[in-house]
Amino acid sequence: MHRAELTLDLAAVEHNVETLTKVLDGTALWAVVKANAYGHGALPVAEAALRAGAEALCVATIQEGLALRQCFSSARIIVMGPVSVEDVSVASHAGLECVAHSRESIPMLQGRVKIHLKLNTGMNRWGEERLPQPLPAGTVGVMSHFAHAYADADYTAEQTARFLDRFAYLPGVTKHIANSAATLLFPHTRLDAARCGTALLGMSPLEGVRPEELDLRPTLRWTSYIAQSRRLLPGESVGYGCGFTATRRLYMGVIPVGYGDGFSKRLSRSHVLVGDKPAPVTGVVAMDAIAVTLDRHVPAGTPVTLIGDGLSFEDHARAAGVTNLELATGISADPRRVRRRTIHQAGRTLTSAQALS
Image 1 (cartoon, rainbow, N blue to C red):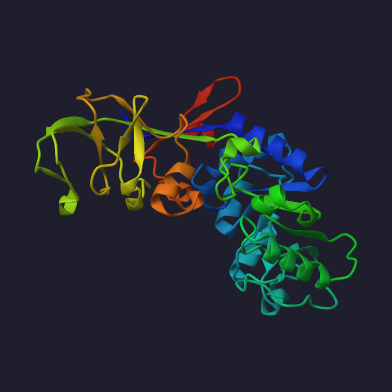
Image 2 (image 1 turned 90 degrees about the vertical axis):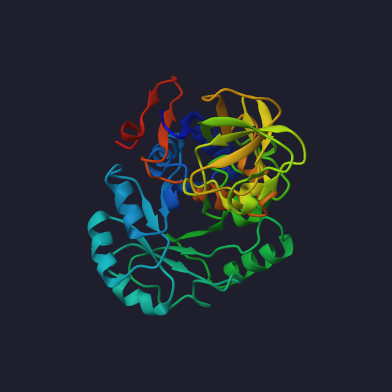
């Protein structure tokens, strides 16, 4: 028996692509699958997104781009992070597009790969203040990134205005700035293409809004089981640092998953589902184990849901004081710690090895 299992629902990914495509109404959807598609599995997510109509894949590194290229020979793949001189040769050979974050990076890119020029419009991280003139050879896109699209309409409007003010009409050059939040909230930001990852994966990019309110379907289910159940007496403690001390007689279950698998230590204030009943995390999440409070003794092997059945990344994020993306991206990709399955519309289940082939 595997300690934990992740099940990716490709039908849900395809549904989310369709939802976003309707919202975009003619603007191209680019699927962001960096960081292993935020912990969900980059290759199967990319395959489903392309099948459903996404027009490009966006990643952070050359290595991520190469992994996709091995599976998708003709897909458009944009590497959004900085690249080195050595990376450019690899990118050119693999047909990857690259982002120029500064004027200094342009000489090594132009004439060798397709280029997206990054403008800094207020996030003050990557990008230049102005476009170079003339545009470098091979320029196919101009882009920027929002700092607070999920919560600050005024600042998002300022960034959009700065972006549009910094270039005149650019025929044949794709303008893109919208992320998932901007796509759903601000039609004027959609321009030629929108880069969506959070919403693609069925997570809400908007504070206080659940995915189903946006017609988004969660795509990942994370399960484990009760490995041991025991009774605690008043005064007995649980876990490292005696992080929890019983004040009454109760039952406790141990789940063989911990922060080494991506169940964050911050989730010590959250809960899981044992069977179909909520069970609060008890004490501190350990590297390989979670203790939970039970209302009764349950046998070893009882199913546990960490994500799914109505328990979402958003629920955990509220309890932990972090974002849903941080929690999802932290899930281990190590097959020795978690088994991955991919479910297709026809109901066929693939193992992790088959899903990535």
